[in-house]
Image 1 (cartoon, rainbow, N blue to C red):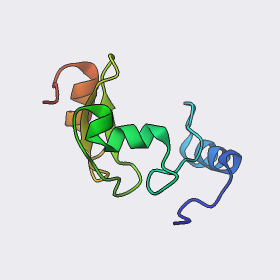
Image 2: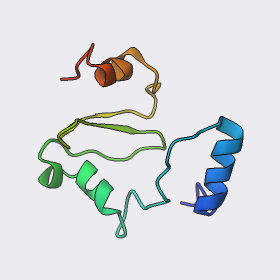
Image 3: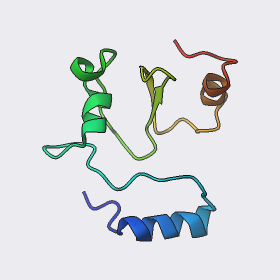
Image 4: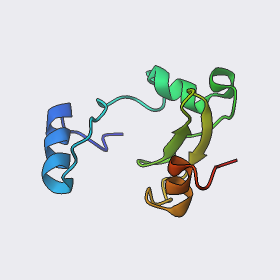
Length: 97
């Protein structure tokens, strides 16, 4: 839908400059439609991931995947990535499910 028209390098530079990111970023991929990337086909299809169907609604939707590659939960784009729920799951102090 043209939400991010820049090239991969332009997006990377923008994020580094404006948000100070230092982590690796994925390339732009399709998350819906006929050209959906295999990762999102797996994340959004219960037949693929064995856990749940989901629909990508907006940027910053989060998928929690454990150390064994098992999809644990989908978290709304509205949930702050620094929320107690997400940080607790990462640190093991508040398991999801």
